[in-house]
Length: 262
Image 1 (spheres, one colour):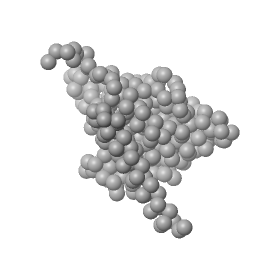
Image 2 (cartoon, helix red, strand yellow):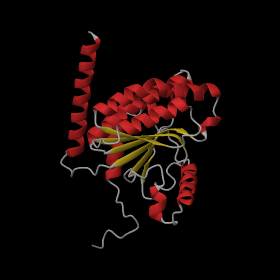
Image 3 (spheres, one colour):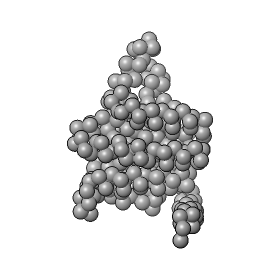
Image 4 (spheres, one colour):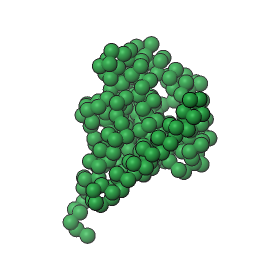
């Protein structure tokens, strides 16, 4: 089978999978249609532990994780999710070995063209969340180019949190407010966050079994729901995502109010 046939076959399989997931979500044994979160944010965790469990180099875990991110993003979109954010590199991750950090950014360089083409083709708007002053200039340039070239897209939103930390984001936002002479208000602070143009986060999923947020979205997570699957990210499947959405759909989000009062 040639590459074109293979790609066509994969496309048909993906479409069939998407249809199956949609049917499951819309008609779950006669139960009401599920409440689909508008914005899901992933703490991509467990790549290295997955590699170790499979007697593979840690670098291979990162590669498999990046490969899986596209599958999960596509599945989320097929299920009706409007925005997906993935935290792939924290401000603390610079403390890892030089070899691992170099590999991670080389991996981004190798995959950025593929994702850019995908976002342009599929009407996806892209955002980068995080610092830009510590990364290599070519990486920053690529991020900025994808952000700029997709800024009018409105079919789906994909955000990459890279060199991101929740506390760091708040400090940068407060510095920006100070530089602009803005009054300290909730609205002004949120307008200076990396997520200013994103919808509120409804669900945060951290793979790998750790039950903490590690500072992720320190401001934005206040009314988000949390889900902590034990699977490592490279083995987290669209079916696992469906289970997470089903779990989310069963929860009653009160936002500090009393749902019994109309």
